[in-house]
Length: 231
Image 1 (cartoon, rainbow, N blue to C red):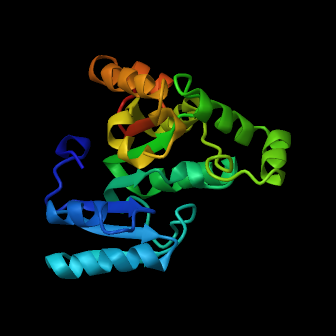
Image 2 (image 1 turned 120 degrees about the horizontal axis):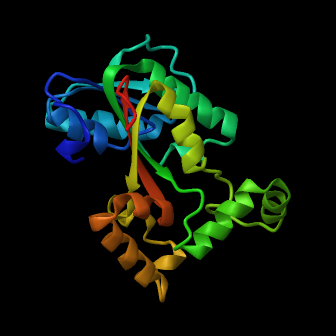
């Protein structure tokens, strides 16, 4: 996790949402943050517990749903981190509830770093078609009836919708997130044949045109600063 993504971590309270598995939580704790990891499955939390014990780190673990963070008081955290989770929430209303909870538990000046899916990744036609199918109820039902598996069930919110939801509460920046998600997507069709050139294009765009990369590529990094003036 690059240091530049967050405010100074020494002593900062950080909430990692649906982030069990022994990776971001322990990394942030090792950097000096006071980390809470929330996940809806005991298995990844057990991995965090294992890594924390091995590395002598203090991490608070919580079993729960990121759409309901009422266990935490308003403005409880200096930072929130979530990667590749929000767009797996089943419906739009629940995704918006998760965004609302993230805003609520952040302190003024706090930073949320969220890796989400782009609903319309035009450089990646296979993913684009799958996401359009998922967003169209009659097509989604047909795909499920045909026995399709994989990305069809999830329905990422559009970049415009996410920005519209967050901007009343602070500043929002959206850039492409292809580089940190390449390993995550090794089995995606576009990693073969002509798709490799699409990935090369996205990685090139992220270097010089990160905002354009967000619009064309498969994933987006949102950096939200609560209470800051939108630019």
